[in-house]
Image (cartoon, rainbow, N blue to C red):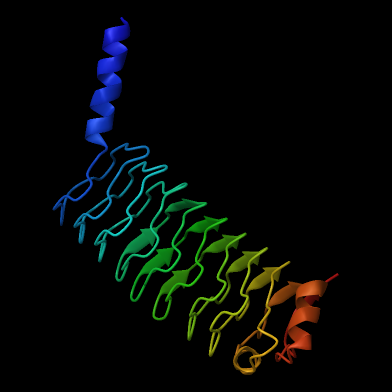
Length: 223
């Protein structure tokens, strides 16, 4: 009986180890691969839709145009990657590490991001629609020109982020942080270009943005 358990354990380790593999345009839809290893692999155009990849690592892999629709990416490492044109429709994103990655043309649709690390990432030309951000960290990331209209932000960090031309029209923003370097005026100039028209925010967030001279003339404050 013990031999059977050991055999099954070894088999599982083999199945979830895809390091340094050429797997471009592969079909992984619906698979379960907890703690899967996809490091240094070619996965461009592959389909992970509906898969459970909890705890998996994609470090140094090519995931350009990969589909993660409905995928469970809890505790996954997707840092320092080119995720251009990847799709995240209704993806489970909990403690997912996307730091230092590039997302040009990537799409996040109907997704809830919880404690996700998006620090030092290039998010220009990324699409976010109907998403909720809870405890997300955007510190030192480039969000230039992003549209977050009507979306919800709770406990989110936008510290030292590139915010030129970002739109939060009709968004809900609570307990979120907007802090720039005391030695740089660039962040403060960027804040003045952000559109908060129709947004709702708590008093502390409002006060922080007011101190940065953001245009809050059309903001509703939650009492």
